[in-house]
Length: 132
Image (cartoon, rainbow, N blue to C red):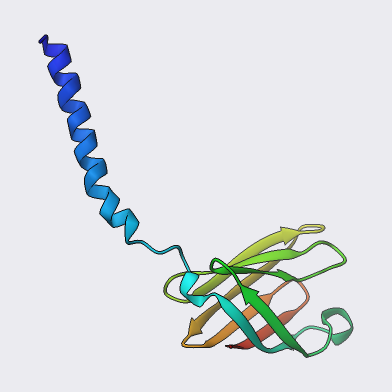
C-alpha cells in the first residue's frame, strides 16, 4: 500500500467509527415537543390593546402535532404564526407579516397546562389552555 492509500483508509475508518458512535445518541433523541402533542382547551384573553382591533376574550382550542401548532394572529393580513414547543416545555414563535408587523409567542407547558403570551404591534393576548 502507498502512504496515500493508508491515510485514506485510516480516515474512512475514523469516520465510520464516529458515525457508529453517534447512531445510539441520535436514536435516543426525541424530536422537540412531541411529548406535548394533543388537544388543548381553554381561553384566549385580551391583555392589552383595543377590543375593536384585538377582538374579544373567547374560548380557544388547539391541537398540538409534532410539537407545534399554528395561530392565526391577524386573518386580514395573513399573520399565521407557527408556535413551537421544546422538550423542556418552552413555547416560542415569531412571525413578521403584513406591512412589517411582528407577532411573538412565549410561554411554558407545565404538566397538562399551557400558558402563552402572544404579543403583536397593537395587541397582547394570554392563552391559558389545559390538555385533554
